[in-house]
Length: 521
Image 1 (cartoon, one colour):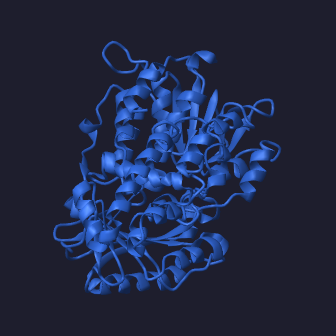
Image 2: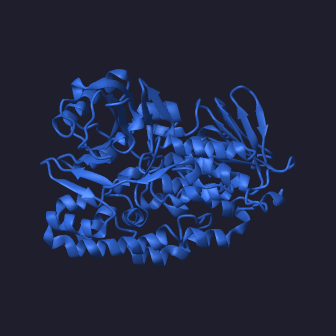
């Protein structure tokens, strides 16, 4: 189902006045409180405003964005989190709901190549959205895999049409919702893993890595993540990979402005201590650490889903959800190093994947053994390849991230450990794609698993909440509408459909189906 057909099916989500903009919420309209100003919370707030709710968004940080916050230092601008923007229509839809145009506020530009993938031997695969160019790149690496690659693209499209267009915004609140899709999921091979699916079509080990790494962008291990995530290949082919000029923070600022300019409130530095209940099983508002109580007719949590149930609700509430989440598998974490250089590296692409010597074995260390290995694979982001405004003249801005185990590994990730790990990455980059790096750095900061826990209250310091394995997907993932507490809703990476910008924005889209219209109160 395309997004235009989706809007036609749900005209009540727009509620536009004759001049094309939503009427402001009525003074006596029901009130919604949204916990967390990450992309899920901001998108939920826009949708609730468009439906006529009075909306207040709360965030404990001093700026909106959550993991997509912005760091500015020494003249450099660093997006803290998401940098790969796909499915831009999901953002366009939010602006349309407010009677506005995304292009009037944010300049999204396409990136090519999507990724430059470098192997340890120095071979480079340029991953683009051009079908002919991709076929030739595959042929250059392994001529015998061209036909299999084309069949894999067809399979990715088939999975995309069901997994994203039909099910990405569908709620899975009841078991029968899941049972309805079981035949389609079996037919699409969702019981396989992403790597297992790729291996059915492609023999070359390097190309298997090229076409199976995507789950790492949403917190999953390609060897355990359900193959439904193979849809990402076609999603990128269909809409491309984009960058917001000024950084991902430009999208955050745009959404925050949509909310405040259309009658919503955004309160920063507002630390939520608890979700309050009326009668023991209905959300009635939130209590801040300051002691202030905000009453609400419904509460939406964009906080970490495990922390929502474990820390924000009374011990007596939602015992089933609490027990399930206690047993849940969480994603890996990340070590992220933000740095600026006094020179530019003009031959480095906007997005670079540096594959390590090991692949499955390294992922076993990260996800299963929870051991911090001596080697690594890296994602290098160079926004100044597209947008020089992110750094002073003649300089480059970067961030590099390394997938690492979450805090169950026992690593303290204090400043001492961070400063032992960072130079290893710096030396590797200097020996590969950024020659002379260690002498060119003029600004630096890091984010560790401990930072994910402390800054974002992410349980176990997981960077993407719950791991996207089959038994933690769809109905088996925490429901968008709480099954235990009435008028409590959950959005973000830990609920359906999952992590990544398309997943997080789609989780807010599900609210249009599961959250009542204001007239119901």
